[in-house]
Length: 85
Image (cartoon, rainbow, N blue to C red; front, side):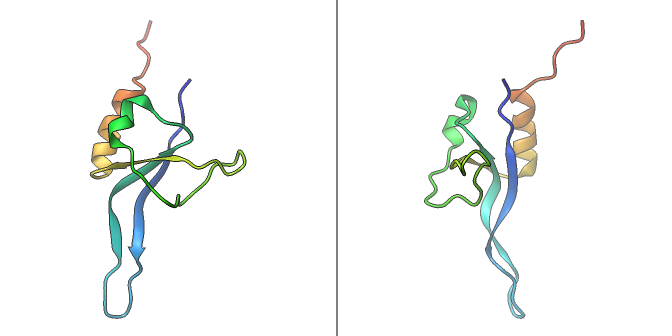
């Protein structure tokens, strides 16, 4: 069974003001409803999740990638397309 990711993307750290640009927490952020063993080395420790899941607001497992392209390259290796028969 494939666990569907919740792609968070960039997380705003500080909104823009009239005198400063917005700042973001480093990386491209993805949440899953359960741990993905293939991504265990990338797991973040968070005190507050930015989103919960609908099944009672379960706290997600959060992963951080360097950027969107790094996530997309890694995602392609997690669930390869089935071979045509």
